[in-house]
Image (tube, rainbow, N blue to C red):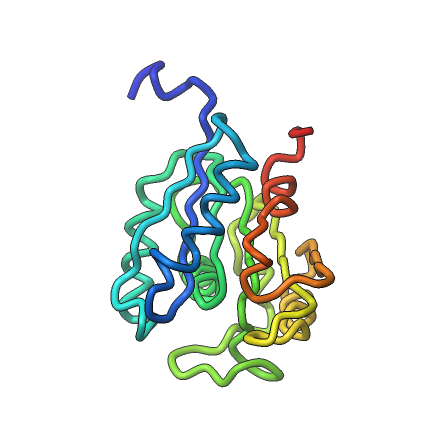
Length: 191
């Protein structure tokens, strides 16, 4: 890469949620909002996950790991809905080779006690201790989320003591397609 890659562009990897049409008709609006808010200093990567209408950890985790292997040090990883749940579990299971600046969960359902029953995995009670060291953790949840109830944010807060939890009034499972607060958390120096 040489000096060309040193122009200061930072990377954000955004993992989509599940469901038919999620990549092209739903979460693309979240990614558009994020790109607009972060501006040119960031490159937002938005890969398509396999079999989005039937998301499974067995299929998504290798895809997530492949995408993380392509990142540079200091990247941010974010996941929406079940994409966030898959992402955080993959990170707890095995750290990427790259140093992450931040891990961001957006309206992510909690798999395990008090949350959704986990078919493939349950999140560990000491999840925070298993996450890559030095990465800031942000949990965003809309208080009008009817898909994954706002109580899921409290479940994450309990098992990730270092997480900053952002509860957003009046926002739904898609955060009303507005990721301005998320962008501010990713890029704190931004006006």
